Image (cartoon, rainbow, N blue to C red; front, side, top):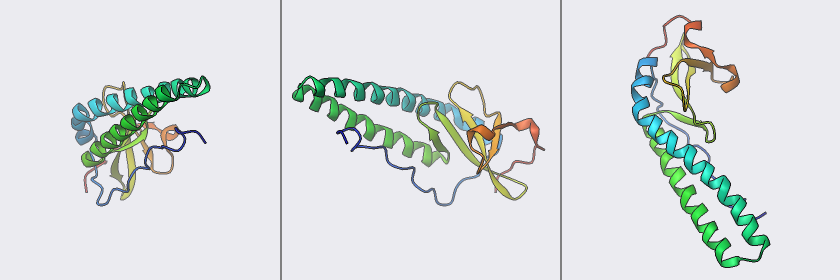
Length: 150
């Protein structure tokens, strides 16, 4: 295990008392969510690059440079945790750091579903069952417009 494998992103914390979003609520929140997720994706790509740089520095015996790179990695990891917490405060859940994938808890026919948005999409246009994940995304128009707040 190298120094980067020993430092991992924290698991998403459990959100107690989840907010339930309507599609309209989720779209309104995108002004802030989009900025946060953009920062997350950029920082994630920085981490990937730093990991590669660190391995090269370590292999070449540049221990001082490697330690500086490792510290930068830790700083970015901490920042990612802060950004993930900001999303949780809004009430949505980060699902993928590379894609910038976010789920918004919602209700349909008395069951929990997720409204699904990905960085680069203009609005929330998809939903999926809680157990289906990203691959199970369906357009919002594939169901009655009964997604509602609790």
